[in-house]
Length: 274
Image (cartoon, rainbow, N blue to C red; front, side):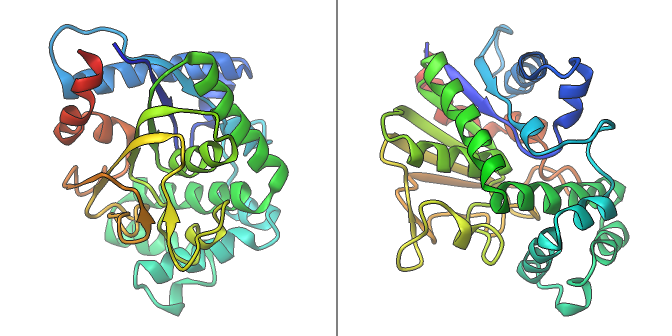
């Protein structure tokens, strides 16, 4: 059976705090949850699926009380989070009236969806900005993912949300890393003016490429996921072997629980789990 490494997305700093500031403890707590989530997709007898979770959220957060408040997070990043937010809002087609402040954007989400979506926005922009604009943090996150893949010997990587960006860059940074299957879930890799143009290595001629050590790349995204814009990655990346656009939930469109329990994931994983 294949070993699977999971790579988490935004908003996971609370795992670190609950584990007594232990990245290892945070990763293990998340691994147990992700096993349950994936079992909902695969069915049969419950068993461990994930060898490890690559945990990096502590490299993006410095506070003592969990993820920072939105206003403080934006101010602490010197405006970079607001720039990310502006690009994100334009991708959503919201125009300039929501691009000046996080409060306006989260207010729009609250009116349109619910408080969970507003809280998601409050985390997304600061954490993505922290990763893409602080090279020290970026390198620590990439190293955490690369070391977990190498140590575990896993040949399948499932990367969710911001974790797909960290994984993509980690695999490019170390071509000696080899995985048979990379699955990206709810990935913002193709988000213009926010993520795509800032990737390392930079896209050439408006296109990125599958990392050289990846045998097969599968992308799954909810059609309404506001973090996965565009939901399909084949239009901006060479080497995406399969894509599934799904309809997870009109509110919980981005959670790891919904993505890992999605029936579309099963056919891609079962050949590696026999």
